Length: 329
Image 1 (tube, rainbow, N blue to C red):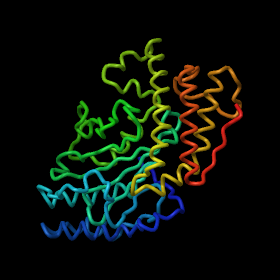
Image 2: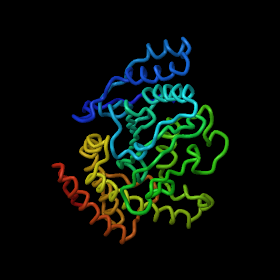
Image 3: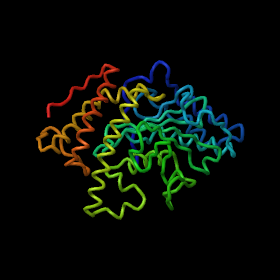
Image 4: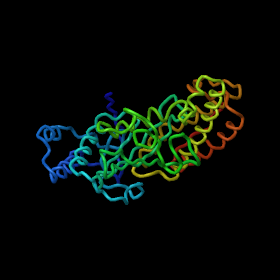
């Protein structure tokens, strides 16, 4: 899988100027050298490795310092096997700068190479479309023998996905927080990129109801379909709540990226949701296709609650001079 993202032209912002990735690789190489010289092949690869586009778009970007609000900022960097640790960090950086799928932002930090922040855009044709999901990551002291630590920044009450908890817990087998076997669990060849792909493609899916342990056996049944539909109603309400609260308190280091994303996507999100409400009420919505997941016809309670939730979302957008008019459906 080779996905090379096309970065936006917007900058990282006044307080988050990105520096060349080569500088980060130099730091890693120096730290590895303190424990032992890297082999010549690896050194040549580092020198020949092109620096990524250092801007605020999708992809990997290196910042000077970790934000104060990073979940793991106060923890100490104490790798148990320094040479192995820094060599693995080097490999992770190479993967992140070359193979990130579209819709993913990753920020590393010169002052704490063990920390990263990740933001994932909800995939299309799922109830998470146009939403944003922010995670803090630490490559801990036992890394790479042990998986990274990962914290989800929740902006809604309760959960909008069975695998993402309100307290920040992320249940993924690669992280050792969910059952799995074989390639599903962390091993010597695993990477942070695999974790990101799992979050984006397997966790944020079209029918998250079936992510819950034991619920998959309901697939194909009428009861399972209705349960999945009702769960998707809840997801959409939580998604709007989450994006509203994120706007009111955007997390560093993604403040500008969040605002840019919503300036481009908020109108489409509102229009899509309002069209599905119209379809549920028996009205025509010719410009918006029906959802690709169980939802319509949505319940009356969902339609009424969504209306007030979207108004709160529009109010938050107006704080940034983004005006999204209600549809006429």
